[in-house]
Length: 144
Image: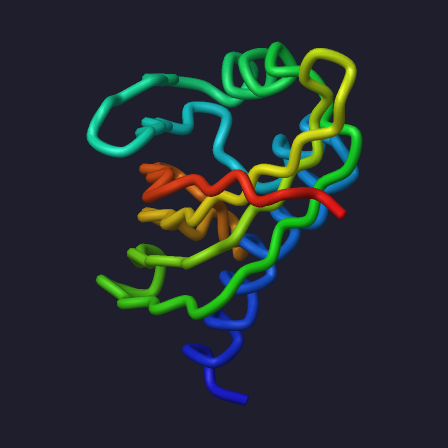
């Protein structure tokens, strides 16, 4: 297998593990995916709602949102471009579906998300070094 294919598989694994661990409400796992000095910006539409500069603050802010009653994160396409053997950029599309309680009733919210990532390979392992997380839109369909 070529070095590029191995790297593509490792980078896909990073974004998929982020989704899987998010479904488990396991934000502590993010230490295994993001560099300690990660730069994270989160946007809701055009409005920036977070500007974080390390993984510990990232974990704390995500935990502050509280756990959903149920969640389902599904990644779609991921496009990766390599700058060199140790640096890459990528875009990953995702749908995040959350069930939360509002006024004693369950509410389903579906988010369309794009992750714009910068990856770095350190000591033979890929990490997410920077992320812009864009919530493109949200929908609140009825919950059956």
